[in-house]
Amino acid sequence: GMIINNGGVFSNSSGANSGQPVIITDSLRINNGGRYIQNSDRSHAAIITALSRAPGTEEGIFEFDLPGASNTISLSGRHFGKLVLSSNAMPGIINYTATGTNSITIPSDLEVGEGVTLSLNMADTLFIHRDLLQHGGTINLGNSNRKLTTTIGRHLVQSSTGTILETGSGNPEIILQGTSPQQIDCRGTIQNNIRFTINHRAGATLTGNLSLPYLLHLQKGILKTSSTNLLTLLPGCRVQADSLSANSYIDGPMRVENASTSAHCLLPIGKDNKMGWLALKNAYGNFTAEYFNADPRTLSDSNGTGINHISGTEYWTIEADAFPLPSAQVELSYNGLSSITITDMNNLRVTRLVNNIWMNTGNTSFTGTAGSRGSVTSEEVDDWVDKPAYFTLASNMPAGSHAEW
Image (cartoon, rainbow, N blue to C red; front, top):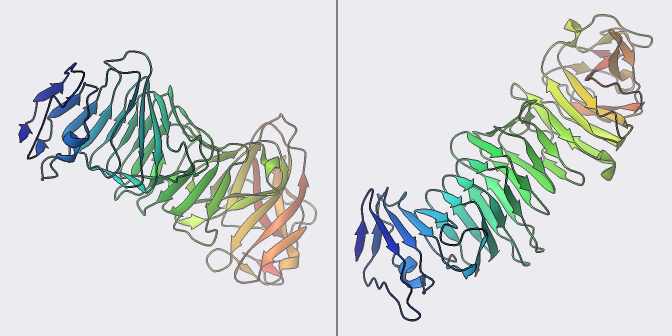
């Protein structure tokens, strides 16, 4: 066998035209801090099969730095410590391709270097227990009809020159499901039909802007955003979320572009362990929305015609781009179990703050029942201004008669 200790480096740089320059009949143990570099284009499958899984090897580095421009690497059914793909031996662009139907396990990080293209024709699961680090190049998570699920146990970090995409029909999925709060810092792009899922109670925080092209699935956990670290749903991107659950929502602003691609665009936003979703219906344009679990009467206590009183518990902001010319009906949710008491749905109104007055924006339809959960949809709003608009729920009747907060 071979043991590479902390600080030790073994580079297999043989230029042999045939045979196996390195033969390990027992095990290859790369202890934490050690590094094995596969720098030869000779077969490496037997070497990877010999990798030890003993405690203390979880951060041992196995690095592919192959001398050819296009290379097939053995990943299916393999178990690494830390896996690094680099292009030092082949400056410029190097292609690594892997095929298989068995899972890949990486107890530490998957690190993809600048100039590297990793193309996967894989099924099953790629388990990354710590970080996915992309310093540039391209990660193709699916070039066939096979579906690969990639789970990330800690952080997702992508440089501005990195691209994650798929070119097949398998609709691969990235799942963040760590045991502690995770960070998402995607400064490059995610393209095509890739599902993006948050699935752990500790949640995740954006430390850079994140734009998603296909599907955002909020299965479990809160995704924290900010105006400088914004979540954007690109045209055609859908959201899958439980609008009745406070266990998973967007805490902070989120942006939806070209909302006209969907007749009903759900924005599962919330704050302070409270879901306060809104939806844009029959919308056209680009919108950014945020929920606030606070009293809107602190913004203004003046009501317009048809408004007797407004909610004292929550409000929303929606900002529309000036171009393309925006329009939308606004659907606001309510939770009568925790925030308001509603006795007559017909008297509820959506209201918008205009010139410091809460103006009646109508009630074209509603869902749910009084005293429980539901929503109210406004009339069409087409006079957006180039700043955030404030919305909340209101009643046209005095408190205690038909609708009260």
